[in-house]
Image 1: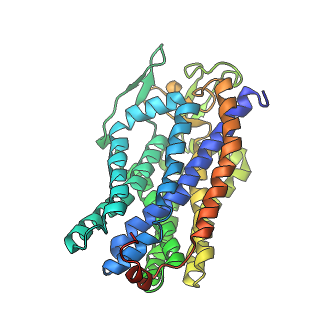
Image 2: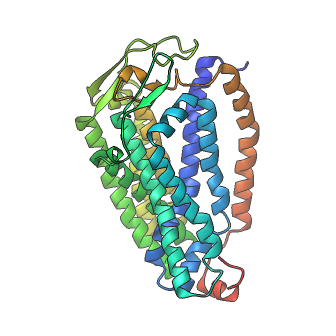
Image 3: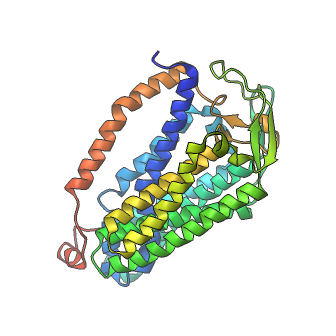
Length: 380
């Protein structure tokens, strides 16, 4: 074995975070584009321009989401079980919303009928806007603690409802998630779509960047002064067998910010989230869409990393019984499982990233109305 059990747990915490960031940057871009579809396309050809900026890559980008779900199940099976019990209806909502995207992309332009295409445009909007909103709401509930507890057999009992998830702080986090995705999609459209679609997308991307900064700061202030964070007291040996009930956990207002004082370098995460959005706005305003898109990708990285670093080492805190909270130390698979999966990732992830980059390079172009009119039967 190359790594000990404790190191493997840390590595997989980082890998799952990296997969979530990859999903946000790639498929989040597609969702941002879909969310902007009704606002930046004023007629059918312009809306087809919007769709074709992601038409060659949207299905491949969804692999990041599938991979992140699979990694969560394999590396943190207890988290997967508890989360999909507690967030069952929320996950179903995401799933049904995601159903609208592949059929919307594939069937929208099959019929030259305005009503048919308008209905599919609405479906693409819903399928693109709902998932990031729900994912943000889920993270907002993690900071407040999820109402579950473990019995002596480590079986999770959930005591909540779907509507309880829609509390004010969680909705704020949902809006942070949606605004950053719209920002990212707007800058992508500015980069890939000819004017006037690109100009309109730049406007919405810049407004979304401003809103993202404002909401992100507001969420941080709320966490600092209005939400109890979790603190681990007695912690079993990280190299020992996982036992979620073998620790003590207390709560205190503002405790989610403790990691930033004990590990000052982690302050780079929220700073990156804010600076990325600010630079994205600046570069977009100065007609540098490539740099704006890069900055928005860094902003997404910083915002998601901020959530992970703030919660560390917690993965799924429990509001019913804090000692039942699941952490990266006690909710993992076996050492052998983590080792085998690590080597699989080490081999295949670079191949996937390389192939993805090659596809983007080979199919890179600006999409225009003239192209859509010339290739009307082969374009989305």
